[in-house]
Each structure stands twice: as C-alpha cells, then as structure tokens.
Image 1 (cartoon, one colour):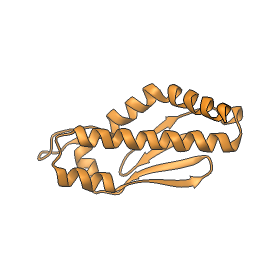
Image 2 (cartoon, one colour; image 1 turned 60 degrees about the horizontal axis):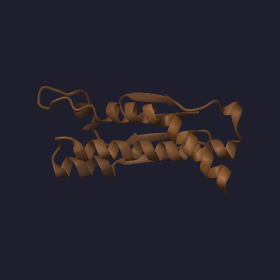
Image 3 (cartoon, one colour; image 1 turned 90 degrees about the vertical axis):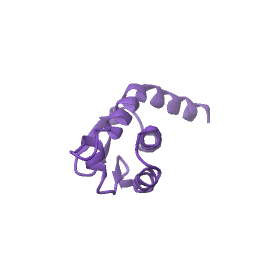
Image 4 (cartoon, helix red, strand yellow; image 1 turned 60 degrees about the vertical axis):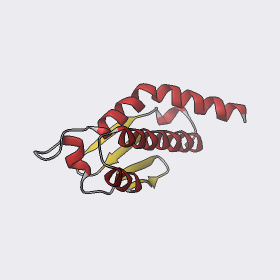
Length: 122
C-alpha cells in the first residue's frame, strides 16, 4: 500500500503489508495516512516564507484522488510547486513536500497503530 504524491516529481511512502489486513481496514488506514500527509503539507506551507496568496493557492490545489481501493494519489495541481520545492534562481529552495513526507514517514507506524486501535475499539 502506498501514498504517491505527484506533480512533476513523486515520492512513495510504503505503509503496510496488504496481506496482513482486510481491504476495508487497508482503505481506512490509507485514507487516514493520506489525510495526515495533506495536513503536514499544509503545516509546512503555512510555516514557509511564502506570501499569503501563494500559500493559499498551494493549499487549495491539494487533492487526494482515489485510484483504486488500495491506492490514493495526493496531487498538488499548481505549476509553481516544482520551483518552490527545488528552488530556482528567483526562488530559494523551500522543500515543503520533502519535509512533510519525512515527518509523516517518521510517524507512520504511530498513525497505523492509532488507526488499528480505533478500529479495534469500535
């Protein structure tokens, strides 16, 4: 199970072994992880040096698209994200997506365990 962020580049986050749990449980955990990644990206955007208009344009361009029950794609449909993420002569490097991805990867096992605990408690 993976979350893939796309634009002109991509990062994959391996979550869990699909053979381990039901499809419904996988979908719930994947959805939660995608939401957490989206929130981390928004937090990074809000903490960046970007101006308010650019920040709001980036935030409003974030979408989570369901490709199949086992695959969600987080998309940022904004042509400026590549320059913001990797820097250009006119824009300092501000790796928003990379920092958000790294933070989520560090906490992914906690996210999965919390979701498993929530589902067991139902």
